[in-house]
Every structure is written in C-alpha cells, then in structure tokens.
Image 1 (spheres, one colour):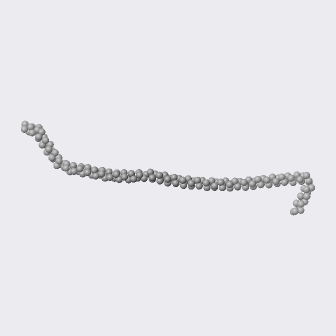
Image 2 (cartoon, rainbow, N blue to C red):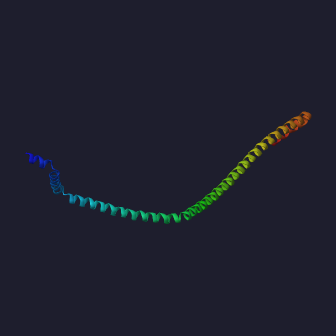
Image 3 (cartoon, rainbow, N blue to C red):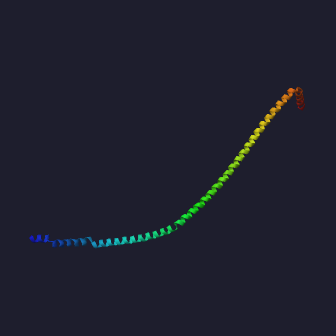
Length: 160
C-alpha cells in the first residue's frame, strides 16, 4: 500500500495521468477540427473585413468625387432657384396688373351706371319741378286773368 500511496502522490504519476486525460479528451473532443474551424472562421472574418474595407474605400472615393462638385452643384441650384423666383415674381406682377385693370374697368362701369341713374333721377326731379312750377304759373295766370280760364275751356271743348 505504501507503494501505491507513493505512486499516487508522486508528481510524475500525476503528470502522466494528466497527459492521459488530455490525450483522451483530445481524441474525444477532436480539438484539431475545432482549432481548424476557428482558424477558418478567423480567415473568413479577415477576408470579409478586407472586402468591407475595399467597399468603404470605394464609397469614400465616390463621396470625395461628389464633394468636389458640391459647390458647383449648389451654385447651379441657387441660380436655377433665382431664375424660377424671378419668373414667378414677374408672373405675379403681371397677374396683379391685370387684376388692377379689371378692377378699374369695373369701377368705371359702376360709376357710369351710377351717373346714368343719378342723371335720370335728376331729370325726373327737374321735370316734376318744372311741371309743378308750370302748374303754379298757370294757376297764378288764371287767377290774375279769369277770362283766359274761359278761353281754355272753350278751346278744349272745341278740340273734342
């Protein structure tokens, strides 16, 4: 038993058992395939990173090309916007002038119509005032000269 205790407690024996356990685990776990898979995954990730790097370089290059012409593009768009704004403002001014002309024409027509209405009303009032004055003058004349009254009656009868 002492011999067995001496073997079990020795570092060499423990080391040999550990190597045996590692050998069994190595065969059982197939570490070489796992390491190979990990290696392949790392290679794939490196290749993918290289591909992304190239794509990023291309995007950067195209962005630089766009940025080179950005000032010219902005100036061109501002010029186009100025031209459109000028055209729209001219159109608005033209439309406003046409509207003013139409309003002036309508105002003139309304004024002419009102003048005609007032003229007609004044003519009617003047006519009525003239008739009233003529009637008053005839009455006054007949009151001053009663013989004329008889003469008008005879003339009226004669015309009938």
